[in-house]
Length: 212
View 1: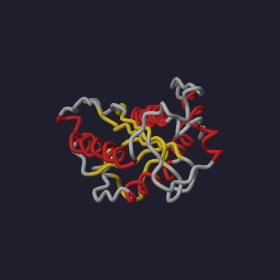
View 2: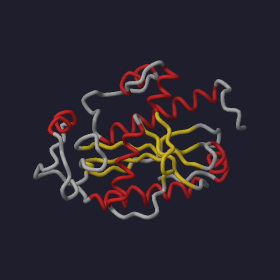
View 3: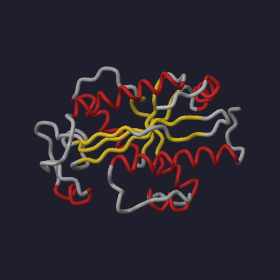
């Protein structure tokens, strides 16, 4: 992960009231964060250059073994195409995955000069719920994310480009999108990060950011 300059860190720390946007996407065994398996998770910290423009940082992603007793809905597996018990699937325990994600997020927060992370997601409430539930199951005391606030690119994209579906919003924003690669946590996180940066940078270019 490239380290931001001191000038860029100062600007990022002021951009979102001391919160560092970190894009998260999860793939799961259903819709209930308390009972359904977390199967994939990916994170992309957002960075800022010396001109004040946002860009995606490096991606960290994990395939995750279902926690003991986890529910997996057949419809969810058909939708994502994930076989959580495939013999060739290389996966980490939920504890290993969450520790890895949170360690990277904490490092990015410190490097950016921010005080805490804020989750960015496409339908962010869904991803946020699974992150918080996994952190609780793993007994992680120092969750680096704001406990309930987030940035939802569904709402932002609806406002900025008139589309709420990730693929369609990316198309309008002229961000390359492959439906064949979609519904993996890594790919969807990277595209959501590109979309978030596009919207925030466009807003700035149009004079909408009054924080400078």
